Figure 1: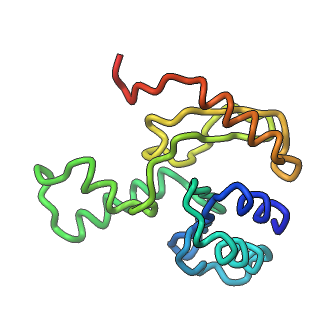
Figure 2: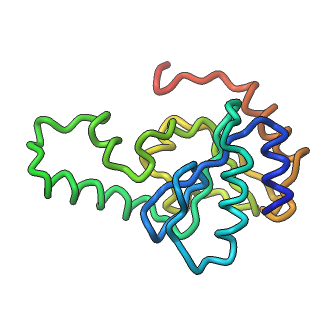
Length: 160
């Protein structure tokens, strides 16, 4: 993790963490999942990159998109929000990623070609990059390859 954080820092990337307790985002809030081996490394990465502005790298551990959506719905109901008052912006504010930008590029490592319940709401208009390279081996040349591929795409965000 330390080497990856240094690479991301050199690229001007901010690494952030988010809540709840059972999932971690690499975003500038404190990480609540004590007992995880990588918590110290992640906290160091967050601290190292907190002043960067070029991009945001979000990483989730022990996260489920369906559970996140159900949790948001439960909170809306518990707060008594009338169904006709719920719009995309409001719903988004109840997700764990509230305040984070939507995902522009999702990189899936390890030769997997599915989302696997990851950021179901937030990746609606994302671009995807699939690679056979495993996460521990994913380095600068792999990031460059993904970003070059992304830069060649014409984003329409649902338009024709």
